[in-house]
Amino acid sequence: MRQSLLLRFVPFSKSTLWRRVKAGLFPAPVRISVGITAWRAEDVRHWIAEQK
Image 1 (cartoon, rainbow, N blue to C red):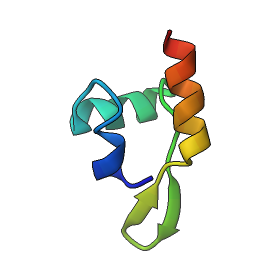
Image 2 (image 1 turned 180 degrees about the vertical axis):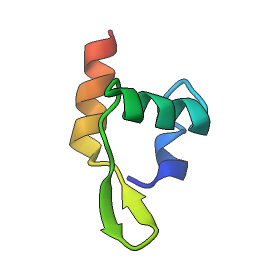
Image 3 (image 1 turned 90 degrees about the vertical axis):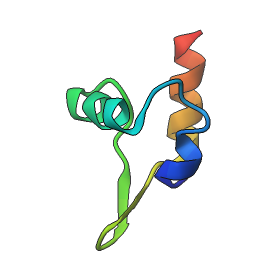
Image 4 (image 1 turned 30 degrees about the horizontal axis):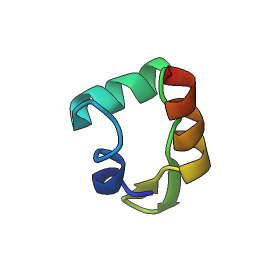
């Protein structure tokens, strides 16, 4: 899941997303190639389920 799509599902901004990734509060993305990162959909689903 690319960042633009991910931001539709999480209640925070791009800056907050990266702060949370850095702090270990949100799953880290996977590097697909140079300059391209994406999140595993299952990791994001699991994180969302834990928030409820």
